[in-house]
Image 1: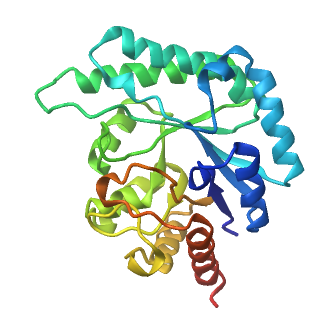
Image 2: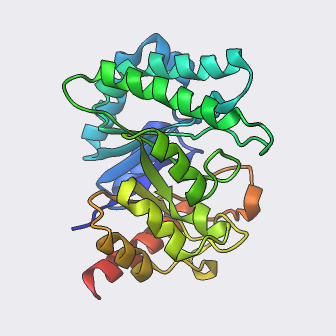
Length: 276
């Protein structure tokens, strides 16, 4: 049975332990954690196992399990060797944290978008991801750490066809599919589902064409349609409700009450799942 997670990004105005407690009190048993206010990358790199132990303690306290870890390292596509290598080295430094956190999957940015006349941008991005995936294999020789990219606007994988070019070049690379990113761009359902055979994790919030985040009543994502697509693809992962608390309202994002909208969308998916 499909299970639901909630993303801590909806509670970026709270310390991580309070965000986790809030998500648990909303009735979720799984949680996505991502880069930003909740993860001080420099501090984690200095004491990766200590940072993981603290988060693991909080997860246990609130009866939560980690469903995904998102590390936003977008400079892996840059022509600037120093900046690109800095993000790769940051990922290497965070691998002990990832292992100690017992994450079975990590989501990475596919890199900042470049103009089409930058012919080296795609090979640079592929090479960066390959180096990061190789480092993941060395860090987790006993159990494979599943690595995926999230196709999103302003990235090297804005739409399905671009994402699939990266996947075709890297056999073990998978997808974290943010449904709202596709809907905001007007990507039709038949193109979205081309990503599902290689999708490891799915995230969703209400959205519509031109608006990356909306309140439930203003969105056009139909829970039943999404669940049908996941069923047809035999999707085995979890579905994360991913509202965002952010000061940036780019791509038409609308500020919402994360508690109200997350529970409302979760309940709509639950009703569609259970046939209520």
